[in-house]
Length: 201
Image 1 (cartoon, rainbow, N blue to C red):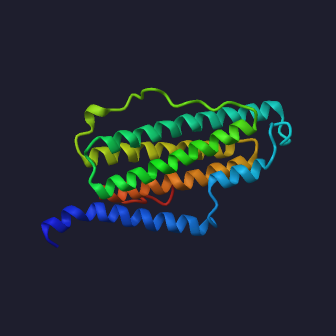
Image 2 (image 1 turned 120 degrees about the horizontal axis):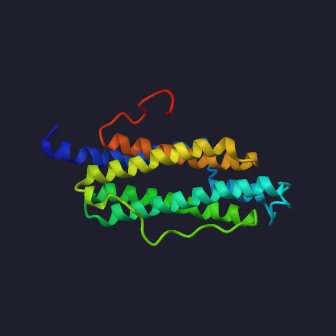
């Protein structure tokens, strides 16, 4: 393989892995996304009481959902930072924007679920405390994004058993799967083992 081929390999691998992972996820999930789960779960129910959830339990679920929305807003902003950094190769930038789009969809779905439960979803912050000064090249940006995705996987793993409404747990698991794919794809692009162990820790 020539030097130029080696230079382009990570970007091409990232794009192809992203395509394959997304196709596999959609096929295995029967094209069901969190938005679909949220709509089906709350189909026409406008309040927590109408959905058969007690006040205290609903309030707990809303708190978890609000935390998730805040984290998803942060992810959208982080990918925007990466996209505007000028450090990403065109092919990698395309995937980063696609991942950002996934996070925007998560925000919309989570916010809709919160409203159905009678709560208000938080807005994105005007500014986030990102380590901008440490982002010097593409690998730095990918490492930064991978760290956020790994944190998201951990957060959703913790949220799944905490929901009182088990259908919300299923919805969170759907998002967790998407975040895990992002993390694996980013690790692969960095030349790291995309699945470093049999168990996530």
